[in-house]
Image (cartoon, rainbow, N blue to C red; front, side, top):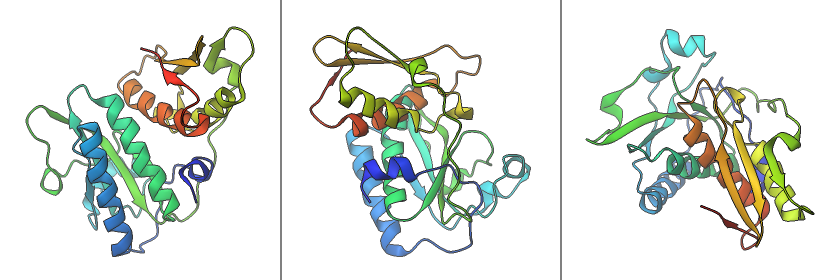
Length: 224
């Protein structure tokens, strides 16, 4: 499975089987996380065999069960977009490894002894990882016209990028993003106003990665 194929296969999963993640897959995730941290200037961390973060009332409220593995999304303050972009790369990699996942912002208990948040860094949330009881379901899709604007004919690569972006996970499935096709095959990606805006920049990083993978390398450049 490629990362592009993983975009369509991935759905948010909240209930997990007790099956442990194999050592080889954990090592693959750790290596990818280390590379993401180097490229993005982040501090993402894999936490394995640790069920306490999802053992309390918050997790039950969020309908989580069986979560014993997760990635702590730690980054320098103000690096939310990069955390979303590189964190979603790990999510899609996990899908290619046969694992399920779910971005989690609030419905978990912080476990400071299991990961490090240095001075100047923040914990934006975690990503649950493991073998889901189900493969999840596709979130409701809004009309594509809500997510872009363009003058003139829209090329196929832009449509493919948009389709991939619409499949991206966002906080509460709000999908508060917008793409503008500009002259010279440039694309501008922006957030839209939301009363619940804490995760807008994180979401923007996630959808930009999806757009890049869908549109294909070399077909466009980001504007701004």
